[in-house]
Figure 1 (cartoon, rainbow over the protein chains, first blue to last red):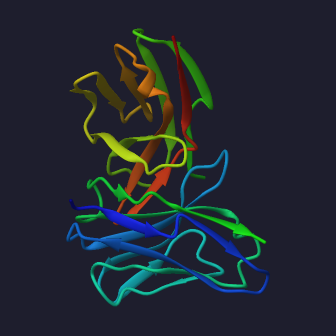
Figure 2 (figure 1 turned 30 degrees about the horizontal axis):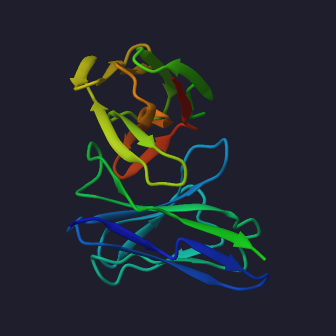
Amino acid sequence: DGGITQSPKYLFRKEGQNVTLSCEQNLNHDAMYWYRQDPGQGLRLIYYSQIVNDFQKGDIAEGYSVSREKKESFPLTVTSAQKNPTAFYLCASSIGGNNQPQHFGDGTRLSIL
Amino acid sequence: GQNIDQPTEMTATEGAIVQINCTYQTSGFNGLFWYQQHAGEAPTFLSYNVLDGLEEKGRFSSFLSRSKGYSYLLLKELQMKDSASYLCAVSQGGFKTIFGAGTRLFVKA
């Protein structure tokens, strides 16, 4: 079955530590996205990638980094510079932009120890 | 500024009809999406409107008025499994989509 897989489901980070969230898709989609979801707020765009080897900052990119070396994979690193990383992180993909619906993974919940 | 407003919570009875409203003010508009999200799970696509009017898909319908910056999602014959958050989202063009905070719907027996 085609879909998006995020791992791990739960992740704990110590102060000063970088952590990487995995996102893999086998839908053959060109575009991939990372969102952050906080209680009472809409999904906020961290980074997006239109195509392999290209990515763009979203609205809240500070303290995060990404790579897109393969079409299937779009990992997100939460660096120690991100001072409030506790959130639910969602990865998504779409065939293109504009009017294409996004397909989401099941999310990773990141907490600070 | 850019804004999407939807009610925080709604409660409805099993078998009834519920309408979830969404108003938006965005710098670009290339269509409006509705997604369903059960707690702790992935949002799933429900509907897309880019032209004014009503789009019907089974028990779910979505309406758009671009001149009023307004949309609604209509759920008929409510079932307990419809208890979830419903996210209104506006595509701004390119690859950017703005999401509302979501409306949590509680369906009671």
